[in-house]
Every structure is written in C-alpha cells, then in structure tokens.
Image (tube, rainbow, N blue to C red; front, side, top):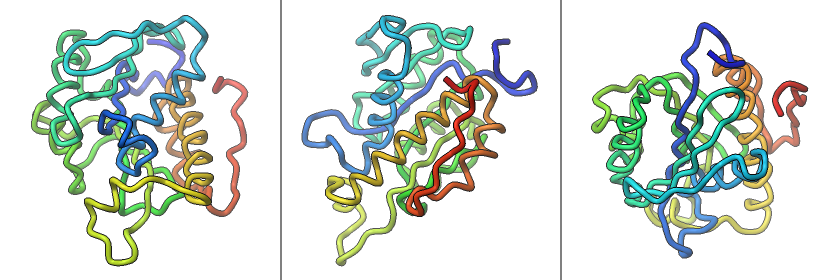
Amino acid sequence: MGAGNQTEPEIRLIVGLGNPGEEYDRTRHNMGFMLIDRLLEKMPKGSFRENHQYESRFWKGVYAGRSLILQKPLTYMNLSGNAAVPLARSEKIAPEEILVVHDDMDIPLGRIRIRKNGSSGGHNGIKSLIQGLGVESFPRMRIGIGKMSNGRGSADFVLSKFEGPDWELCSKVLDAATDAVILMLRRGIQCAMNQYNPMDLSLDENPEQDPEAI
C-alpha cells in the first residue's frame, strides 16, 4: 500500500468521461476529460507517458508511491466501458481501484460529490462501465453541471459549452476537483469525501489546502 488510507483500496486508474473532438471542448458533458487535463498539469513533469490503445488515450506513470493511469476513452460517452474495461483488465486493476469522473445534472454547478459506489443515476457513461465491469462497486467523482434551462432538452444542455460566469465557476470547480483527487491519492477516498463533498464553490468557499495533498 502507498500513502493513502490503509483500510481503503488504492486508486490505480482514473477514467475521465467525455466525448472526443474539438467540438466538445468545454462542454458540460466533458467534465471528466477536463479533469484529466488538470491532473496532468499537476503531475510532476515527465512522470507520465502518453499511450494510444484500448480505444483511448491514457497516461501511465507513478504518483504517491503507486503506479497510476489516467484515461480518456475515445469511444464517445455511451460506450465508455469499451475503453476502460479492457485497460483495467490488462493491468489487473480491480473495479474498486478505478475512480470514474463524470458530469451530473442532478448536482448544481459549483459542487462535487465523491462516493465509493452506487448506481448509474441515469448517466450513460456509467451505465456502460457497470455493464462492462459487471459490478457497481467502483468509486466516482460526480461534478455538478446544474439543471437545463430555457426549455432545452437534456442532450442539448449537456453538449452545450460553458461560457462567461459559468465557465469561470466551472474552472474553479475543476481546480478543487483536481485537488480532491490528489488528496484521494494521498490520504484516501473518505478523507476527500469529508473535505470536498460539503463544499459549494458558487458561494466562494475555498478548501483549506492540505499540506500533504500536493
């Protein structure tokens, strides 16, 4: 075991869900992709190597004393399991060692919810992973994108881009979510849940930086 909580499985694979292609940059459905980008910026320079395999881009390296993989499935959202499951199996990574990061319409923009397992909640990317893994027992980080407005359908809403104040708040949330993942890698899932689940970034709350989180 590494530096994390000894009673919890260590996270060895982080899967950020999204859709490939420039037209999906900064869209609400691409929170997972954007989180992977922020994590790569925080990792020690040169410590992760990019790979193209299993219908995905993934970066493999070492962090906090353990092997770690960061993955962006390129299958489009509804088939995310087709990329994540073969990679996990090839690396002998158990479901409880996989953290999946995705957007959630049922959570307001400005909030993050970390949980150790659960149902799909209607999210097609999570449905695909549950189907492929055969279990629901993998940790998730759900990043709120808020409810649709102006009568737009849910598909149009999740594929719309963040703009103006919404993008500024989204960027703050992504920074906090990145710190939460780093804390999770260092101190365990429960520690990150306790610190970040109560936060509401829309109220200009800022997490107290844990000196061991970086």
